[in-house]
Image (cartoon, rainbow, N blue to C red):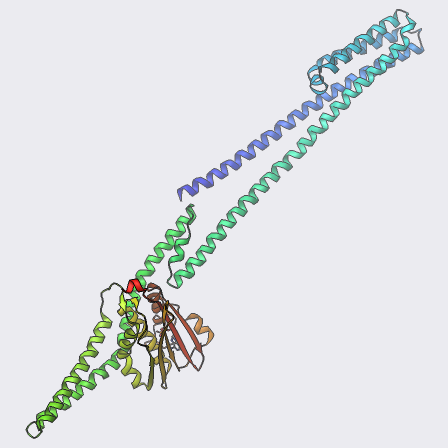
Length: 467
Ligand code: ADP
């Protein structure tokens, strides 16, 4: 969080510095431009002084009787020479040292010619005129060049804000696109991680590998959420187990009651008729009592196995055994509700790696759901098959089935269509979690009014692991 704040601060400071620099450069350009304009006036002065010189020179040519004109011409020429000398750095900068010296030489020669004219030498009239014209052309060329440099400076001044704002725009767009991409990546991650977590698959959380502060924060938030959910899931499994035990109680009571009644009846008969009965029949009745007691203790053993608390390491298991054991737990309840059980559990199924207790819970929940879906009786079919890589058990019923809406939500925790007391909405989400832990999966197919089939798949134990 701290480094994120520092980064934001650095970006803001860099932006402010860039803006200040741009403004300073702009200001400097404007000041320089103003100076150039002032100098431009002086270039104008040179041109107009030389033009004035030429005007007086022409005057003298037309009216030689007025020698005062030449005096005026010389005054203007001196002024022009003085200004040219003042403008020396600018002229040298724009046109070079040679041009500057050339203009000064021209002025000197022109002055000498004007002096000769003043002294009455008519022979220099032509060359004076030619020199005068050359001087005017040179001064105008200077002015033109200066004007050009002013235009260039003006272009620069106009271009600068445009260039600076384009640069800022490009920078902001680039940063925006870069950040938007990052943000989209993160949102994608949040969606994937949230989807994964909703289904009990926490692997997606690990996929965010970037180390920038936001990603690190998000990852640690998701990881702590996953840890809490895991803990909650364990609690839910236990809670659901209690509910299942409650649901099972009636069936189990009946299952225990039957052998106990038989034992009691047989023992009564024995007590009353012990003396009259032949020894063979007495033995048979005692055998019955032993059998019935065995049945009762098997029921109790199954129940104990199911409700055992401790977490056992995953072990090699026969899926057919898991299913059979579980059917024994609920078999009586199913037959009481008029449900026929069809099993297809081939002998040659490969073993799987799992926790008997948890897998029993998976099938208990599936069988009890099927039982509740077939209120008027029906058939529960349990079939297992394997393609060598995974082993799948199909649990099908001929019950009420589900509509599309229900079907899309059945794995959500606490989603139930059953009345309070009958359903908690936890069974399937717990099954999902247990199967994920086993590296397996669950699939469902349902037709409203026709029935439902759940397919539970688990990876088969590899040969070397099995050995
Ligand atoms: P619960 O059984 O406590 O409601 P579950 O998570 O086991 O919770 O089941 C959620 C919902 O899925 C049930 O309320 C029911 O609507 C639907 N469902 C589950 N199994 C079946 C089934 N075999 N036939 C029809 N609906 C089923």
